[in-house]
Length: 208
Image 1 (cartoon, one colour):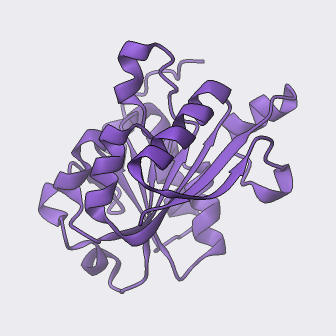
Image 2 (spheres, one colour):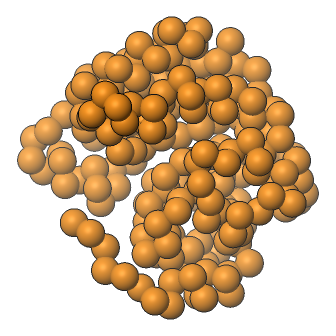
């Protein structure tokens, strides 16, 4: 379902000092922003922020960065960051395509891709966030042996992603074709599919 346009979303987020718009000048300085040297975990396509907020609450010694371009959804995440008084979460309104302009080499420890667009048509596969074109970008910002986690409700996308990881040289640490609810942070989007008895596919892979 398409989110209703929120005309005040961008002005509201610009008032939030935990939200950054296209922060090219912060490349290599994210630990300074957090004012610590804790690991940095990045979620690409954070939506309304349900996943990253729960992760941050459970892991205060990790810095979380949520990246999203859809401001209608992301304004909800920005409100949650304030409401929960989370100092270990930052939001970025930015393009996944521009990761290497936003993060420096070895600046990120961990990457999450949750329910990203599967782009089923072959001609659109290069837009997938697990495609080798994106893996190459991640490889430039993630530390040696950094981890990528993926969840999806699309089987074909999941199977293709596993092949992308293997072909790129990542080590598959875990592959699950029916992730249990107990092992997942169940967001509003994920709940929709679980209520329809649709399996959730999960992969965890390591850069070598």
